[in-house]
Image (cartoon, rainbow, N blue to C red):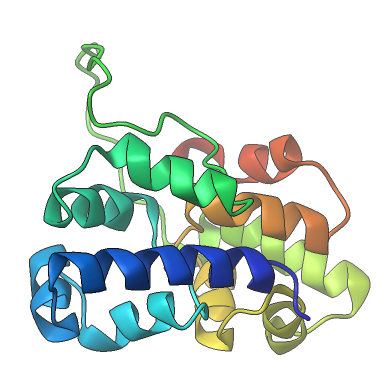
Length: 175
């Protein structure tokens, strides 16, 4: 079984139960959460886990606190790295002058990931299979188009046999 697949299946069953109990049609739920129905099907099939921002929207649609969804993910072995609830207090940040945007290929995580893949002689496809992800996701990380969600950092760390803090550090200021 691929890494994380069991955990995703446990969360998938919980989400299927929630949708059934609350009478949600997949298409209506997807629209409420702001994703395509195929994303909801992947969550309920145990093929994917939602991103951090999607967890917040799932909780709102299910009329429960985000912490309840995070707790279920945690019971399934998937834990967030950062704060998990929208009830956290926002800390005002000092005004800073705008910085020029970083080209995707120069973003810290993409550079780190490309170096890790090259060092091991791995392709994006190999890492995707090792983590049970779609290769498009891994390529988006490697090219700097996207950063992984916090729930994906432990899987990346495990794949590269390193600790989560090393992966988190690779996100740099763009994480």
